Image 1 (cartoon, rainbow, N blue to C red):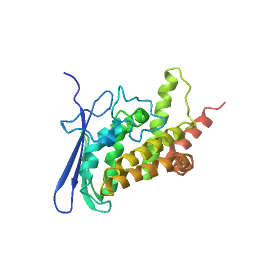
Image 2 (tube, rainbow, N blue to C red):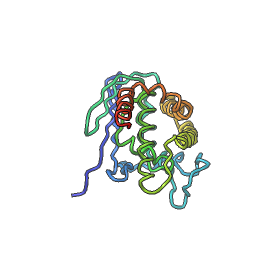
Image 3 (cartoon, rainbow, N blue to C red):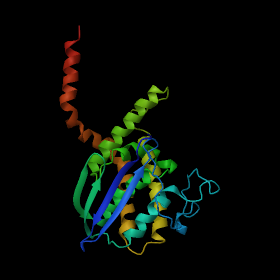
Image 4 (cartoon, rainbow, N blue to C red):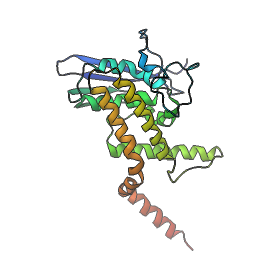
Length: 245
């Protein structure tokens, strides 16, 4: 029997007691979103040539639609019911746990959109797939820095084992986030062309804020996280001294 898709549900409970449910199904091997049952034609703003990223390697002949935009289209459509500052009761359900939190519509949509873009099949977002596999809804700035750095360093371990040159100094991690700024800017242009409310636009703005801040904050903030590892570092130092001749 083939492995079952990984399913992540985002349920928005609005103040009028209505609900919006978004179900993300991921291929367990590629970690890309599986096609939904929606047969509605994709809107024009999802066309690859519409505000295409300058560094996008895709061509319209083989990829007529931007993968990220195509996957975001249903969310943007349903997000029209929301204003950024609306409070929602967000429930995120994965196979491992359920997370429930009251938050603003823009923060909830930001968390959902980040997951969808990472798993959309956009060539620029491959690095973020492992983070999507172990999705953390509404992650804080500190949590995002920890997860992004840990994911990158684990990737470098596999790069080295495959015979490549590992980047344990995180030099290229900032490049990945600068590329995401380009993706977010293009996505904001697409959404702005169609959205009548601000919730989806501001959600993408939040994503872009993280992408802009992280390259400058990663190395600075890592030193602030050193205290978490201090007991281990002290044990390593003590072990090294005890084994010295």
